[in-house]
Amino acid sequence: MKVTRFGIFTVLIGDRRADRVVPPSRGMARLTEFSAAAMAFLAVFAIALSSATGRLADRWASELARTATIRISAPPGQVEEQTRRVLEVLATTPGVGSARALTAEEQRALLEPWFGPDLPIAALPVPQLVEVVETGAGFDSDGLQLRLRGEAPGAILDDHTRWRRPLVQAADRLRWLGFFVMGLISLTTGAIITLAAQAAMAANEKVIRTLRLVGARDVFIARAFVRRFTVRTFLGACIGTGLGVGVMSLLPPGDADQGFLTGFGFSGTDWLLPLLVPPLAAAVAFWSTRIAALRRLKGLT
Amino acid sequence: MIELEDISYSYGKGPDLLSGVSLSLSPGGFYFLTGPSGAGKSTFLKLCYGELIAPKGTVSLFGRDVRDMTRDDIARLRRRIGVVHQDCQFVDHLSVTENIAMPITAAGQDPGAATRDIKELLAWIGLSAKADALPPHLSGGERQRVALARAVIMSPDVIIADEPTGNVDWEMSLRLMRLLTELNRMGKTIVLATHDLTLIRTMKQQVSARVLRIKDSRVALAGADL
Image (tube, rainbow over all chains, first blue to last red; front, side, top):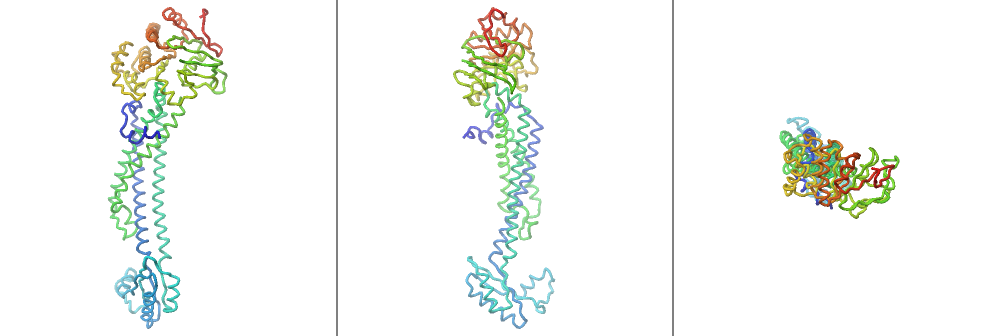
């Protein structure tokens, strides 16, 4: 493949003689670097979005996937008896790893955010909650529901899937949205670099014709433009990525437990992900300029 | 070396500028190409170095049909054919030395290895003092001589010059012609387009040259009627 003669490695090593033949253009260089920096800055945020929503989806999926709750609403004299029966049923249900009734203190803690710390829970008809942890295989929720109806009529199984699934799906979609935005940023960067490369070649058409006249092959001519745009884009992307990471580091720490907004950002090894942005931007610039340059050169004799 | 067989060429859907042209340029020959402005001299020359490809007829350069060549083949071929344009076609931000070395650079070779050749060429064209000058700072005659030096740096077999004396005075025209005559004596084939019949008549006394005249879309050898 021709790329071996005209690859990214060759471009990064550079050919000073090939570079010299195309006059430098400071204005175009600054614009290219600025565009690459802006796109890299946005890419860092897209990665952060994808990373944060990914963590959130994983947490919701892993924490909630294996738990279920049984709510027992019965007359005050029957709550204890029905709780005992529920626990007996659960003990013999395949797929149930463990089950336990929440204590009054635990139930008060759950209600505290809404009713305050002085809630007289014993005086209120608060349903008894039973926490169920599944085994890896999981249990048959429809079968369990039927058995509970027979043994403890006041027990209602809530396996969380009703509200968990849409939340996990939403988080997953947000993660894919992050990937989509990164793809969009890459395409936009490619389009900007293509336009800039075409403008540079149009501005240097006389030089290109002269080079062809003296026997320069298309690859030689294209290399001068490709290297220039690849290096400029790489430098701009480094600056944009640096700024993006700097801004991300100023955001509140990414503690996912506190919710999505406070968890927006990078965590642990995720901080390494933005390092991919400059080489990715350089690769986009390399191919965009190469295709644009060779296509334009084909139109010249 | 350069053979044209039944060539016709037109720009767009216009009438044929060249029609039914067949001729062979032999190695070591000196050819003047003349004809009125717009007759097709530049078109003929462009066909001879592969810048234009005729839709009808066959152009063979060094034994190969131009239509069978890739763009890279044509690029390599141009290293064997030095071209001098009336407007010289320099890269203005490069020095005279760098412009002369451009065919070496374009061939992927190190121009540093040809430093002595370039110095000798500069001395030959009488422009050693202008080695570091930029093309826009040169006079018309100096530009033409630098263009000639660039055309010969790769030691081509053929030198094609399109109205090289168009923008220079008579003295400089003769000086350029002396340089071309020297190259011809070294065995280079020279094809020179000019509408200046006085120059052709003067040079014919000094060099054994054939004169090709374009008339009514055809190219023919000119005789005593020149």
